[in-house]
Length: 172
Image (cartoon, rainbow, N blue to C red; front, side, top):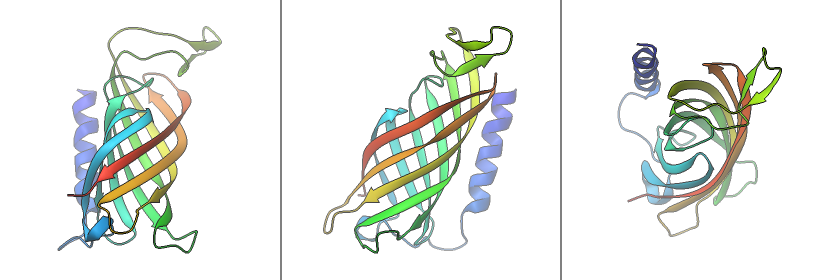
C-alpha cells in the first residue's frame, strides 16, 4: 500500500509543477523531450522533459545498489555558469524508488553498528540532490551529461550513498 501512495504522490507533484500552456523547449534544436542511456548509479534509461528555458524534469529507470529496478525523478534548474551556449550546469532535488534486492554499502543498522549487505525483496525510498553539467553540441540532436549528488534513503532504513552518472540523450 505504501508503494501506491508514493507513486500517486509523485504523479500529483509532477502534474502540479508542469506549466500551463505549451512547453518552451531548451533542449537541442528546440526540442522539449529527449531519451537515452546513463552509466553509473543507476545504470539504465534516462529521459528529460523541458518545462521552460531553465527548468526540466529528468527521469531514470535502471539498476542500482539502492534496489533493482530503480525509478527516479528530479526537478532541475539550469544555469549558465560558464557563459556558454553549449555547456550549462544544473542542480535540483529528486526522489528515488528502489524495488527488489538491495546491495551492500547502502544500509546502516544501529543494532549491528555497521553498514551491511541484505538480500530479499524490498522497497526503498530516498531523496536525491543532483548537480551536473550538460553539453549540447551545436547542430546535433544530442545532450551529453555528467551528474553527481547525495542519495539519502529513509525507507526501509536510514542510509546514505552517492549517485553519479554519465549519459547521453537523443532529442527526436
